[in-house]
Image (cartoon, rainbow, N blue to C red; front, top):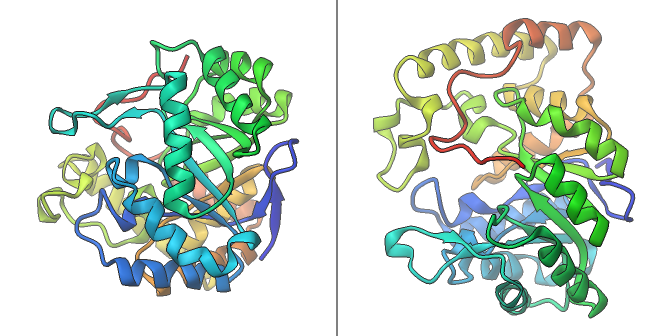
Length: 325
């Protein structure tokens, strides 16, 4: 497995990471035993960057606990990233944002306990909280870094002004935002990241599974599956996205690879400071994804991809889009 530097703060991780969200939420009921086995298989294949969050356990810690149990035998060989920033006190009425300093400290202590570790290698603000100055957020994380509880500060779905203001208080090691063949908007932020020496983590690098070629119409998913309401799965967009993935499949087969491998390799070819974190509940799929680190794409391949999806997929990535400031 190749490794990459995420920014200039000393964060070095495998070129392909692993996102754990789908093990406990968003894609219907999961199997925790298979989830732990899948995490361990990813590590066997050279993955040493694992991404979780308070939100992924709906405030119960279930996702972090699962990850902590899975990696306990090789904890010191890997980098664990987790996140804070949501209000988990009234989930029946939806969850709001909460990046107040006292909540950040509480989430950090909970995450350390749930993960069974003495440090959080990366601690992200999951979403920017307009009610809390980003300087206060960065300052609180700086306190946690000084205390040895956190190693690196990250932001997720943040815009250029927020990134600059946070970075002036505590250097930001990495930004995490959705990026894939289907979603390109974040490219406008790359100049800021390069100027400040910040790495980039691409979540949903396979378009929430659409790019795997297994997409079904929205109404065929479990009631708890976010794809039932994802705009890309709705009539009109769905058919156009299926057609694009079919065309990507033709290109992939000509190279002897799969469409997910093509999509992940495409991301790795965009910038040398990008690390995608595909998530999967399947050990077989993890084996497929990690192999993408060794795929080489030619200029002709990249041109062919651009002809198929010049600006991304069809349909917004969320019904209610995050606002970058």
